[in-house]
Amino acid sequence: MKLCRFNDGRLGLVREGVVFDVSFATESLPQHRWPFPASDAVIENLGRIIAEIESVPALARGIPLTEVSLRSCVGNVPKIVAAPVNYHAHVDEVIADPAMHAHRHSLKIGEAGLFLKAPSSLVGPGDGIRVSFPERRTDHEVELVVVIGTTCKDVPEGDALDVVAGYCIGLDITLRGVEDRSFRKSLDTYTVLGPWLTTRDEISDPDALSLELSVNGEPRQSASTSQLIFDVRKLISWASSWYTLYPGDVLMTGTPQGVGPIVGGDRIDATITGLGSMTVAVRDHTAGGVVRL
Ligand code: MN
Image (tube, rainbow, N blue to C red; front, side, top):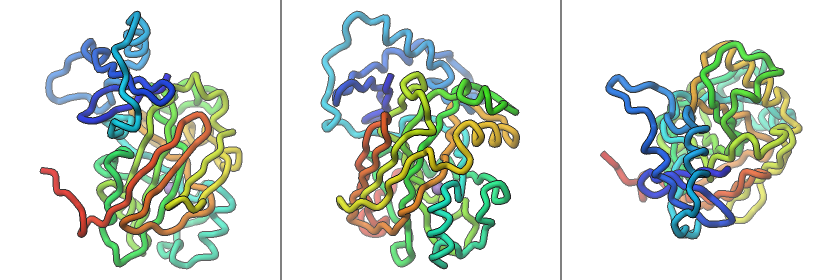
């Protein structure tokens, strides 16, 4: 099943270019009083949500995808765990470009570890990216994203896919410079998740998906998750050996080669096999940013 969030936070079922509003399925979610649990309620109760949607004999008329604005496909993300330097060809381009290696992290993932991005950096394709410091270099990174579905800790590699709710496309937008990585990658709008969550039953092998990213129609990144240094199972197992993972946590698996700059006015198109495609507009924060209070 393909589930999106759209417009003012509606839950949508995506089928062949059409979005069906299935927000009714969230009405039976457990009610909580403050303090609210950190997990995402839809992801935590995904089985129940899917059963509710499937129990409806006929859905109301759908809306063409082109007429909705897509939000982050996970509403409440407790934490964003991300893998650096997880494709050999990307490591090579980092070595070749001093601007991409200003912070001098280890270039071996086992030594470099994982890093965390602020959940407040998260947006959907329809929100777009706002470049905060246009005078500095800002890069795109397309990544396979794993959405965790079960509270878990110390998950063995052999069981790792059992804790997955689904997958989506992620953009890990990166300001280049000498500051700490999480500081440069956590600016507002610098994590894009979309276009929708594809439940794990639809993806038989997450380590065999093609990723593509273009900027203004120019191909930049093209690779397969078969080239991951630490594959999806190993990343889940490793992350869960450091942190308890919660429903709605997202694991960004790392970007392949072809990372390059973006500027205000650009259009990013990103595609992953089986997970769909998304178009994301890039604007300068200073020129067109909107302050939402
Ligand atoms: Mn990345």
